[in-house]
Image (cartoon, rainbow, N blue to C red; front, side, top):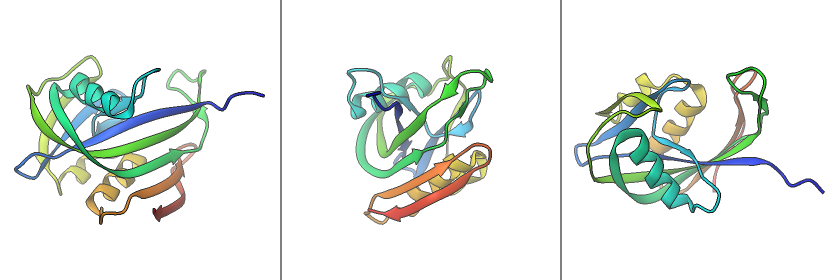
Length: 160
């Protein structure tokens, strides 16, 4: 039996007391909320705290889960050769508790933006959908399945 292969990733919408959210600009994804892959032996919360610190310099407290998202499409990485497996993403709301805003090897820019304006900066369709789930959060976790290649398509969307 072959073991299933999934990438597990986390992302955080970091919201400050002024109602602004933290966005980072990545090489391949444009403007996004900070996050990334969970490493072997790492729990979800520690992975999220680490990724946000690495990409933006900001220390956070994880507040609550607002979305679980599955990219069930398999596609080629930016190198055109490597297969990218399916991905499960867990998106959380976070509060900043310290640190100094700065870029990293993974980010070319990072900034605090008004919560409503952030959507105009996010261009990747899947990231936009996930951010819209944050904006529409009503206390129930959003679950969505989608594919991003060859074009973005939502396969399933529901509150759980």
